[in-house]
Image (cartoon, rainbow, N blue to C red; front, top):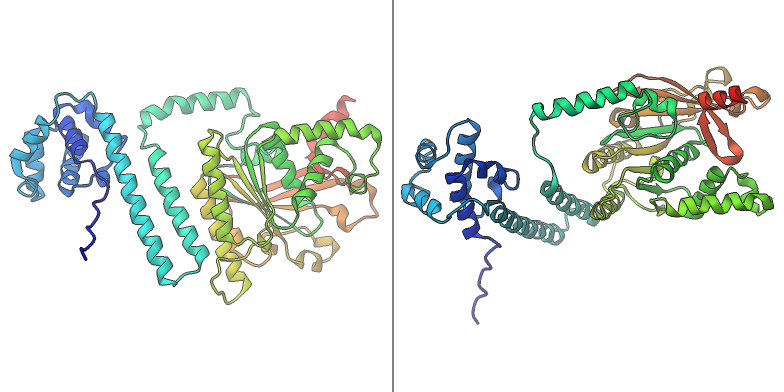
Length: 458
């Protein structure tokens, strides 16, 4: 029985020679090529060495020709290994013009991607046969590797600061002329956006509160603004509520219809036009809900990356992920000595997700009972009240704690609608209080300053 022949990995030696030859005869070709491929994309090792030598010489502001490249290779003791002057001359003779260099470079890149996919597949197979890791961990590893290949394919390279100065001045001028302009993703809460300049890419934002304070309502109000008003895609992982419960909240908030009456079907007939109008807006909004309550942090990351990839392919990139809430997320499957260690692992993983996708990730979290144990006079939440793990505070870029004094003091009618969003940590900005108004019957938060302005105009 004949032995199976070893398959040769995808490669395009002719395209590699054409690209290197073009780089040797025309310096403009070098800039075109380095924006598409790097040395590791070449299949033949000697081509990697020649590419590296040409690139180094060019970026030292020296002419990259047969002589200078030969000398550079001699210094690296690579000249004889690549075949000397004869091989470099062969590269030059392999092209008549550098006009097709970008096309040849794209072929090299495509073959490189295929080889990377083969290597990843082999590693996945080895991990699966080895049975040393949990399947979900292997899935996450493979998903990350595939995502990185895609990211490398489309990511931008370095930019000269000379090209960045003018756009930055234009942005600063715009911000100065319109103080309401913010650099991040608007939440719809002007006072909060003023302090944070919005939600920023790669940031982990924690919104924490005791049960029944309204943290889910606040998160849904942010989603409503991003997806319904700004029409930017949002992914929601609802581990506590099912999709139907979320939809009722969305309708109550957007239509401003009493949520209790919605749940029991006792709403007024005059509410119906408002409900259908709100439903039409929500139906058009790019909101994507995953209400799997048994998901672990690895599965969550895989699904988030999948959604991001699908939306990117449609030229409508994911703008925000909201997770309700961290205490409901299972860990990666590894054994931990305590729940605190497991939550620490989850927190780090969610921060990594924000960085991988380069979008803000808003995570809801419960506060511990210590806020109530301190008594009515001192039940404002503190960073130390974050439940289960100090790592949540450490990993987060922003920690905002929701507090309603009226929840503890129901006898005072003047404070029943007042709420405070306490920014206890902000890595790149100030801390402090944001005053809000909470209309519980609609599960709706609003800026206190906006309500006051409306009252003043009435």
